[in-house]
Image (cartoon, rainbow, N blue to C red; front, top):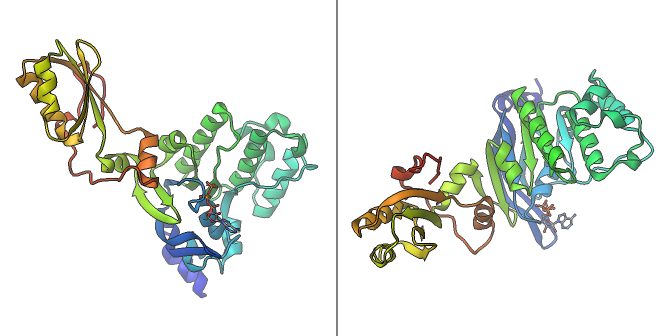
Length: 340
Ligand SMILES: Nc1ncnc2c1ncn2[C@@H]1O[C@H](COP(=O)(O)OP(=O)(O)OP(=O)(O)O)[C@@H](O)[C@H]1O
């Protein structure tokens, strides 16, 4: 058995993508710096990061469009550089800025993809999946941005690949298209495929991803579920209390608590308290001890944007999740589901 075969057999059981110490230098620019990551088979993995973080460079290395300066990338057990033909044959790809042939129809593009993959897919069925079957015999040159994106996705789905690598798949899609994209990504995972995709659209990522990795300046700064990353921030919980009467005593009692950074009286019965997550219970106790009666509460979780900013800018620093307050991880007094 040859060496590449051996590597594929051993690694491909559980691992879809393996990056080890991956680095890429463009002259003085460090596009990737010692990135190590394992994407498991069968998961939907979101690859996030601000503009210029290195997402496309990583994907380009996986597909051997770009050679790394350091480290290795393995795709379904194949070395991305030495076995790049096998990778391209096996993987479904939606690259950044894919070039379509203006004078060929959607059907002809699919025929080409089907022949390249050696699959027996029906081009119309593929076009139906991505919602452009009625444009099968129109030339791609006249397609809108979203239609082009859908056509490239149909090409990526050809041959039911074990792994889909999608670079910004929602680019150019309207809200319906974005929803259909999410449905397709889930359906692909459900049939057993692995989906690795980069995105700026955080709601899209949260809606479908099992785990995410966040790149910043070429470094991988976090890998986990969105919930775990949000919990790890541990900052800026906002507790919105409805109290029978917001008295001065109640406000004073809350304001003097340690780890309370803001108290705002919204109305005679509403108080918004900004505090560390672990202080939320103490706030409720303080209100009651000062003679207030809490009739309802709600907790605002860190928004996706705040979370993304925390991991990718210097303004906010991710903290440990050890100070989470399990007492409040239930529901508010009006039965509304809340999260800490
Ligand atoms: N061919 C190239 N020559 C020089 N620098 C490059 C080249 N390709 C990428 N870079 C640089 O490498 C860094 C990473 O770029 P990359 O395109 O991978 O980021 P990205 O995360 O995909 O960004 P975006 O979200 O804007 O697409 C950037 O600083 C970019 O300018």
